[in-house]
Amino acid sequence: MKKNNPFQKFGYYSSRLLLSCVLILATCISSSAQQAKPLTRIEFVFDASFSMFGQWQNGMKMDMAKQMLNAFLDSIAKVDNPNLELAFRCYGHQVPLRPERSCTDTKLEVPFGKNNAMAIKAKLKPILPKGTTPIAYTLEQCGGDFPTPSSANVRNIIILITDGIEECDGDPCAVSLALQKKGIVLKPFVIGIGLDQSYMNSFGCLGKFYDASSETNFKNILNIVISQALNNTTVQVNLNDQVGRPTETDVDMTFYDEQTGVIRYNYVHTINNKGVPDTLVIEPIGTYKMVVHTIPPVEKKGIELVPGKHNTIAVDAAQGYLNLKMTGSGDYIKNTTCIVRKHEDMQTLHVQQFNTAEKFLIGKYDLEILTLPRIKLNKVDIAQSKTTLIEIPQSGSVSVAKPTEGPGSLYLEENNKLVWVCNLNSSMLQETIVLQPGKYRIEYRPKNAKEAIYTIEKRFKIESGVSTAVRLY
Image (cartoon, rainbow, N blue to C red):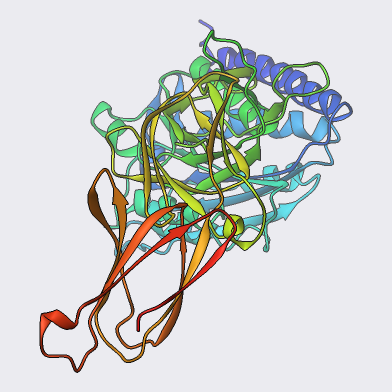
């Protein structure tokens, strides 16, 4: 009776994998002719620990994983992709578990290079499972495998193929996070081969985890991972106005890696020649937090991109203008500013200079104009695509001369009341104060005078653009 060959079925899957990968790579090269693609560096990290001797579906885990990876490498060798470099690192393949395991058993077998798929195959072929699983130490060593310095037009990617978890008391998640924060690599891909269900949660923090529960699933997952690594994922950000149309633009946007907090991208939002938001190329690794730097800023969290597809991110960012104007000319205007806050919220959003117009999200704001005396305006309305004009008269100034040092204060006469404006500098004999137009009064007493009857009072009037002299003697 003829025995069934467990690898006949596996050979069928490998042939399909070969065809799929060739199609993926051909598509990538075709698209790169239409737009400049970044250099992609992929480092395969291969688990050759003793547990890879275990059975998985129709054969040994090591044999199945090798055959799948070989099928991919065959496809790479058939397509010339100048924007792709590969490397191959293995762990657990040099030192046996007994008599004493090695938690530094990892080696870069093939360094990064172009057209080196066959070299990786040659190194992979004789490898047999031997030792332990030092994932954290291996990832740490991967950090030195990638050429430095890296640039914004280079994508560094790790694909870890493993059947087990860390066995050397290291912290793979912390190492992965450190590599990402330093900008050495993007979030790694992890392909689990016949993993125990209890192990799966251990890889979520390390990178994008895929559970290859069968040979067919392994093939599909490898296709997905390679497609994500090589194909561009595009994003269109719609800054919607009050009626939901993406008409807002010309504002900076920051994309943060939500897990690491690292800034991944910064773009100034642009409407292209077709009248639609411009297309951005963004890595689909992990989740993002996007901050649109309007006043006040708009945040959107938990952004997950569909790899290899065109994604649309929409946020409400309806805006209008606040125009601050002071009549006249001169340094009075240049030195006058206004604090802008959300209505009934003391947090300062912006300090705006006069004779400028700034965009704000629609809504109601409280203004504090930093003149003397202060001008406070509440519930100022900013409407969609409208300009709200706030106009104040030009300031004037008063030059105060004192015979000697001494305390004094300046008041505004308003509705038969004295409203405190500021204190005089008690140690200065002459000072100039810029004031809004109005009627004022100074109360002053010489320092050496020991009775209140020596208080000196002076009344004066301030007019726009006019300097007034007041002598306190």
